[in-house]
Image (tube, rainbow, N blue to C red):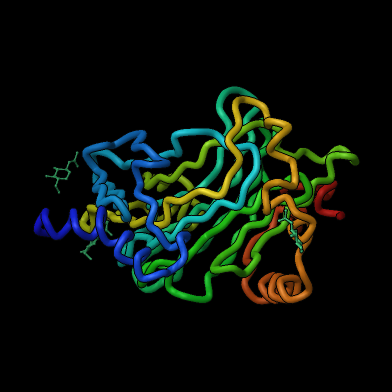
Length: 285
Ligand SMILES: *[C@@H]1O[C@H](CO)[C@@H](O)[C@H](O)[C@H]1NC(C)=O
Ligand SMILES: *[C@@H]1O[C@H](CO)[C@@H](O)[C@H](O)[C@H]1NC(C)=O
Ligand SMILES: *[C@@H]1O[C@H](CO)[C@@H](O)[C@H](O)[C@H]1NC(C)=O
């Protein structure tokens, strides 16, 4: 793109929009305001309001938020690699630093051309994961940008795909179920997961299709800044995502969630009796 036009779009356009009286929240937040590239810098294209991560046989790439958060309603628009993406994992997640970490994951498990993507979610608390669930998406995530969101407050964690809840993890800490206690950083990455991601690791990456490309948009963050442990301020109802209306799903969302469970869930650790002969406690609630 001509650099003058680019400067106009990025720097001036939001103000043009503002002067027409459109509300402030539509102002576009640029990548560099809240995020930084963390690895594979020469495999990242930063266009300000959009980032492209690429992966070839020399490297993948990733980015992360500049600060950590102790609660929030996080979102990212993502377009995942198309064509043959077997073994390629696109991830969008929250993760704490150090030992016994907490982590909330979206992982797109690439597939052979023509086969649909699986979207895996996982919840790690105090260094323990193993809570995988997978759904088949009802659209083609390679064809366009779709929005993926994670609500995290002291009552529940909800994963959303385009505003439809696909997974709920309740805070059942009072009966001994792990729940995140540490501040987390927002992360995104494109990496080689051929050892496990597709057909349990049997279908490897076909490098003929490299470089693989994943695109990201939406760099504004609704989150409460926090250091290592969750700042007590982050649980206050000054933050809208902690408000009572976010303690549980409303009836419309609940119906959408039930529908996803019936139609699109392809794997649920709660139902995997071979792996967990006794159901994990959180699965009973
Ligand atoms: C990586 O890919 C490049 C370009 O396709 C190719 O020339 C090179 O031989 C590959 N390297 C390895 C280690 O496979
Ligand atoms: C990789 O893809 C190319 C192009 O479709 C195909 O010719 C080749 O056989 C594939 N390689 C493997 C190992 O499947
Ligand atoms: C919390 O939500 C209620 C309605 O659900 C609303 O009336 C109230 O203003 C909200 N409070 C805050 C602090 O956002």
